[in-house]
Image (spheres, rainbow, N blue to C red):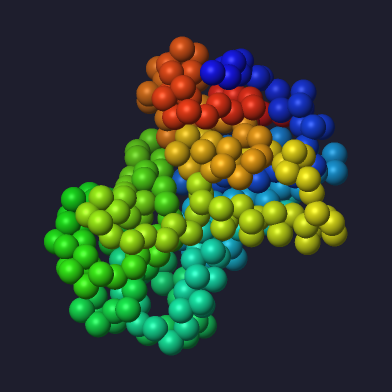
Length: 288
């Protein structure tokens, strides 16, 4: 078993090992309501030293919509060079199915995912495939509310395109369910799901393409660092793609680890061991 990493207090002590960072958004640079100033500052300083930062997010909306949201909560633009979202990957997958009919599961705010694409949104009874971007109302519903719909989709043998593989995310101090929670129930029911975002390969390939365009040349994967707060998506995704990961504890796993700002190291290493993957480094929160 790999030796569990010790806690680091300063990103600057090992940032020179990397040319590019693929940084998670929700849980690292903001909590859905306010930005994490220390993390934004650290990314900005990494860029000042010649590094490239691409935000890599399971948000089920196009990258330009994500940017408008980040601007709205005052995430500084000098913290990153570009954004690759699960919504961008989803749009590419929808485009591959041009001319087909789609049933959408998710809130109206996610509808930009279909803008300018050659698909028709229809009821589930007429659909050729399904796009799930989230719960219709994540403030009142749970994934169990969708079991009847899942049964209908299975009966019709519909493929689901999951636009956000996250199970839950933080919104302020609360955890809310995401599309991945519904997709997992569909898989458990025997349904076919194509996951667009982390931890799956497509989003990492698209992010590395963005890094290459920004830097004007390819970057060796040994010089790329993923930063995130989720074992299921960020850590496992980075490991499967063959890049290092910096794990931030003050995110969705915080409540499992004791006090949010003083996590229990043995509990943390226990969940790493249970997952079968270990990060390159661990920080309570991203700081320079």
